[in-house]
Length: 129
Image (tube, rainbow, N blue to C red; front, side, top):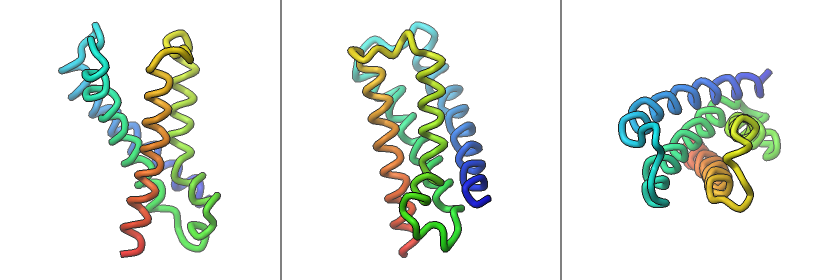
């Protein structure tokens, strides 16, 4: 049940932050035509997504209670399952745009890994202080 609670919090935070990101950043600054350069994609798509993943991972990790958070594999599963599942869902819905030769797949995977690592590190820093 503790994993389900962490996942529920992670889902809520990820959905809310992605909604805010899509309505404020993507719809306003990117528009339907997309971005024109790698730098614009990084600044307007990938960095806001990184923030969303960090917040969702951190929130899910924060509600994962003792003594289960002391088991590293269980704590990582509680914190990172929702962003990983969102990545799999995105890849399955947009498989034609995600070719292994393109940068979108590798950037979104890098965002997932970096966001999960940063969210877990943030949880560790806040939990020990």
